[in-house]
Length: 111
Image 1 (tube, helix red, strand yellow):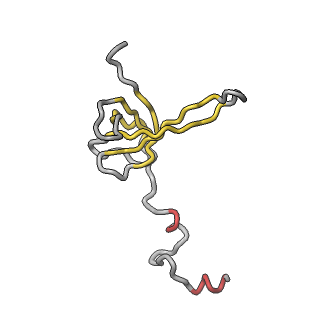
Image 2: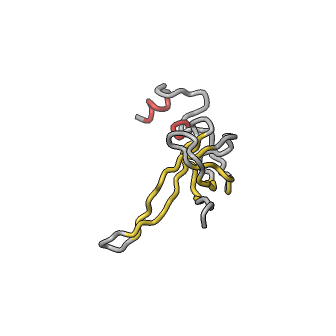
């Protein structure tokens, strides 16, 4: 079966670099002594020329020639698109217009 390229299905972990995504591929490894399966995560660096994938998306990757020092995979398709909120976790509890590190009267009353 020469000429076939491996394909992997994974989740995008990072899309911060230009035309590059880091994809986590989960697989099971059997313990030699205890014979229990444990989940492992392999991080693959893939080429995304259109910057279309974002964090949390399920993507299909295919092996390719080396694009850079670490990129050996390319994005084939986005299987499932996930909407991730633009708001950061530390911004959830704050009131609109409030900045980090700023004490308000309500914070002092509660203490």
